[in-house]
Length: 263
Image (cartoon, rainbow, N blue to C red):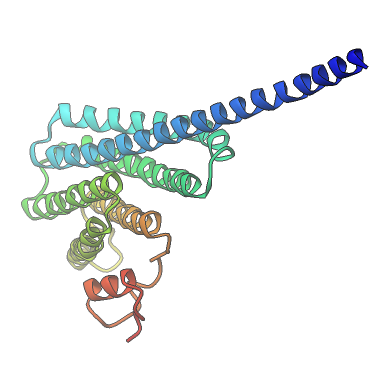
């Protein structure tokens, strides 16, 4: 009887040991996943700053034809590519080990880096269009392009702040600025097309391609602002802001407060 009790106790100890080990391992994996999630969010925040700096250097390049600004734009494009590759490699493993809140954060990271990497490409493309020009930019074109770049810099700064502070008010500023970027681009196109004769190609085609690249950066900044809203609130604002007659700010506030935006 004594041997039987000893054997039974031993079996209980052997059975419970793996349970304690398994619990410890799960806690370790959860902590590791949270660390990975936070690291990826930090990478996206860094990418926001890189994209913003890229557009800042586009503005400097337009204003001063600075060789250093051109090289900085190229470096930003490369860094954004590297960050995107890192997130693509690390995110699948991290998202499989976290809860819903962290998963939403990681999905936002994935959406963010897609737009941010594209902004880096477009900024470099805009600079490349003008880099080989021998003549100086016409003053009117230069002014409009610099104004577009300045607006875009401000928009990306607001995106950076919105993501860092988890605050949708910054996104509202971005959504308000985007139509002005579109207006400047369309005005530049209309002027150049009007100056061209029937059947002629528009003059300064490289300037139009630069304006188009900047306008598309604005579209990506708008996407990022909408993603800030989605990430912070858990609800999508996409497709509703431009379908109503009310002022954009009022539509946005109605949406944030859960009111019917159609009224």
